[in-house]
Length: 542
Image (cartoon, rainbow, N blue to C red; front, side, top):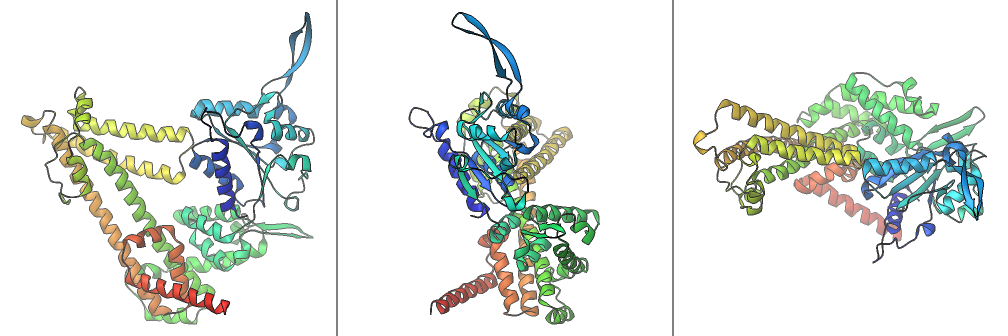
């Protein structure tokens, strides 16, 4: 199965194993909770999937690569203890707690999460001394004398023998005690992930026409040559950072990540062409509404790979702008939610600059909240806008830090939280300057006056940010229209236009934007594309 389905299977398994009956006991007892065994090529995303699953399920994750362990570090060290059997004292061998089991308890203590996943990578590459312990571990959930805590699910991963000469074949006895999932590379699933995570557009467009190179492992007399999804992703991030630094990734750099000389050379040539068009700034001109006839004529004579590269740069620029716009929309929504809490309990009658009286921010905060007034009545921050906003910022920051401590915050969520806090800090600074300036009406500086004046200032600041967001959204709409102008001028109703529409449909950010923005040409071309697909299906049936 592909990695997307494997992820769903693991999530379903976690939910089933953590499901409790009416008495609060796990419906599937720990002894019957089969560990999951993931087998697949290197770099396909097995470890990354476990990190995603843990965050999405809200459980802790402890990950180990078992090949780094000896029997002593995994099982524990022996020591002599005294025990009494009957009326006699005997010396008995016990073991210190396994490093792996101890790390689970450490994780519980640091995160406060009592349920989680113990992920053991390269389980079929264990040393000879540790191999006999694996059966006991998988069947009894113990390392040495120490049991894996209840509520912790075991997931193990390994590579098939053709990818690793150190692999030991798992016997039937062991395989009969696990949920075995064999994962195969799937370009379409990877592309979904790539678009969501912002993989460099040159990588995405290259692999669109060379899907077989996403995960390509070749054994020759000179050794193994390979390119893996992990290699492409790491290379993508390097290229993005290089571009910010003004550097270029050439063939010698690329082959360090794509350890297949032929693929590395091919992609290096493609990347060079891609960067050439990017540097000539023609795409920026196109999206600003300038379409040069000479450029369209040049593309008409260009090979398909070159035309594909130009379309990819065009789509990448639209994708990046849509990501920025929609991320700002999320930031604005979260800031608005916090500002609503600031305005609770006030009779908001001060109009905000640039906002209509009926907007959601005004409507929600205009409602009286007796509970909030009663709760804040004895607090100095209820009389002080600066103190109240600072309190809300502190609460937001604490919630963010709590998720970080529990390791449940994705990178994207972390970025959004930072942007929200940055915007709120800017508002707080404005409030502080306003209070210091003496603009506060001293005659109305009681619980109502100062808070309502502060609220009016916050609404003005929020309205200005909202206007900037609307301007960004309108700019993106214009860029999309200019993109269609260029596609029609350069390619007309051709396979390139089909590719353009198809790529718009697979971009999660563009799809979200197009759901809100009414682009007539997009819907017309999209409807025609769907019609052609139906016609093709009918012809195949005939």
